[in-house]
Image (cartoon, rainbow, N blue to C red; front, side, top):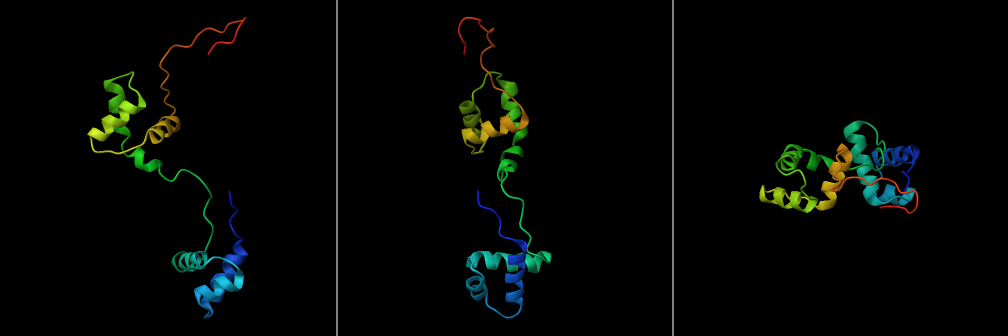
Length: 128
């Protein structure tokens, strides 16, 4: 994953733009992309300083979390429901989600979907 550019560079680009240099000119002068210079200047105008945000993280979990009650209702109706069946049940209610999205929802909330009981450990051969 790429590392964020330094705060000093961000401040110098914003200062150059505020000093009368165009955004494209400032980007070329400091060797950054034009879109970065535009975004940093906009952040500086809105928040006072163009500070880098925390990298990474889940950007889309809130889209499934707003439907958590409906997902849990499907689990209550049928205890041994599969992810594909949950996906189709949500589609019937007008909610479009992927199976991977549902899997991450259950992982995030600590809900396991194990279908069979665990087997005892064998001393002779490994069991699945």
